[in-house]
Length: 146
Picture 1: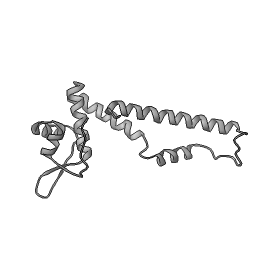
Picture 2: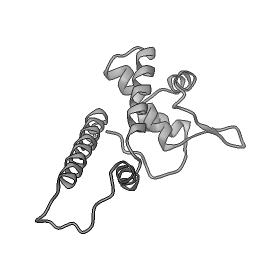
Picture 3: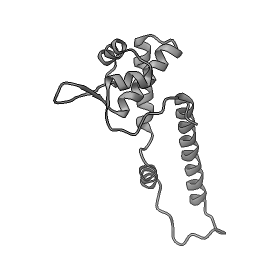
Picture 4: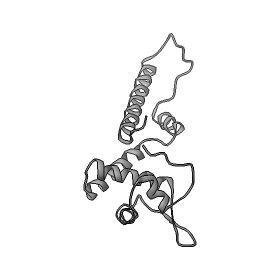
């Protein structure tokens, strides 16, 4: 597991040191993977952001550990990005989506007197939470997060 320092930008040699990728390999990956897109400073120096380093680490894993071809690695990265775009960015977004899809809660609601609609809402909420947990576990396994 690579610990990325808390900096906004990294020079190419820092990225190579952090990731263990040779400079010529890094330059090649920049041309092959759109997810690796360093900024160019006014002096012409490439500056990498955290997202670039995370992409490099993922590409390295897919190519060297998983032994995928470049085309298969591109496909896998696309699949991962699509799966991540399905997950709400924040818990607020998740619950806003839920509020929009659920019918209004009847008033007054008492704990002892749950109606069928309330039970349905609880079942739907449980399903959504189970789905969110499953997506989270998949991401943890894929990126070896503890």
